[in-house]
Image 1 (cartoon, helix red, strand yellow):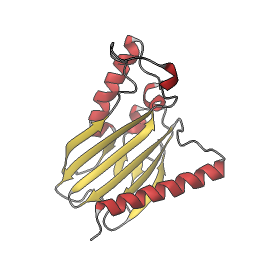
Image 2 (tube, helix red, strand yellow):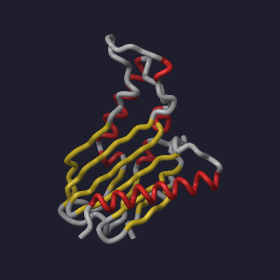
Image 3 (cartoon, helix red, strand yellow):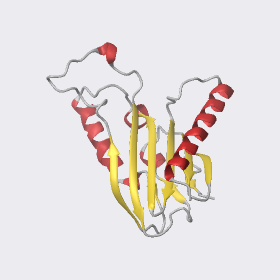
Length: 184
């Protein structure tokens, strides 16, 4: 039986190939595309690993450090919303339990008073990356999953989804009208 590391390496290679092919086809050499997100799902035994990467602009309408009280509140709301996996994806008849969430929004939050602010060192394009780890009583890769992200963040037009299990892998482009991820 191949390890999860093998499948993750395969997914990364597949992502690089797809991204490279898309960049060549569209003459676009930037992976940071507003309106687009990347979603990777991998299963190993009874564990499900989910990774979402998208420009902050898709979720917040800005990519700089929050400056106003409204922007800060929006970042905090984003953190709360993405902490609930059901705002991203729903597995019908799922017996999965979320055991870990990793979401780092430090590049979007204001600097502390003792930190120096250098405009030249700020990133131009900030990505939001959230990782979920779930443990499941039964396989989740049998039934299709519904992607909820479009409903909560209408600035996202497409999601490039990659999935891999111990038996198969695949990729699909999801849209607001085609938001079901089938593992087949």
